Figure 1: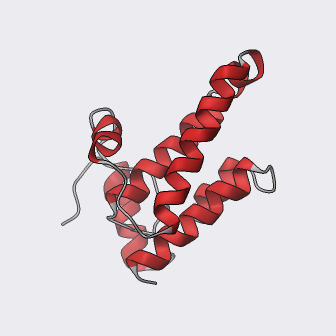
Figure 2: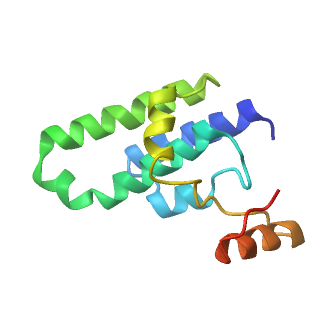
Length: 123
């Protein structure tokens, strides 16, 4: 798949989560594998935070609405194949070096995962 198709796929996965047709774990497991797309990495982190904030979302309707709108915004941009705004990407990059997106199910994917586990960069 190309970059545009990968972004459209991620947009669809986000929407499936927002309408409760898919859980976050299932969505991130279906993200494009081994992608270097920073917009997709940021979308991954936004979904992980969405799940981590489940308790807060139940207690605070305004927060829930804002988080839903934020994910919808990300989904809309990705669906059009657009980059996410640089401030969103940088906001996640300052805390995470990369997203824990699954690797291909082949030897190269195994090695990438193993090197990541050992905290060694793959070039």
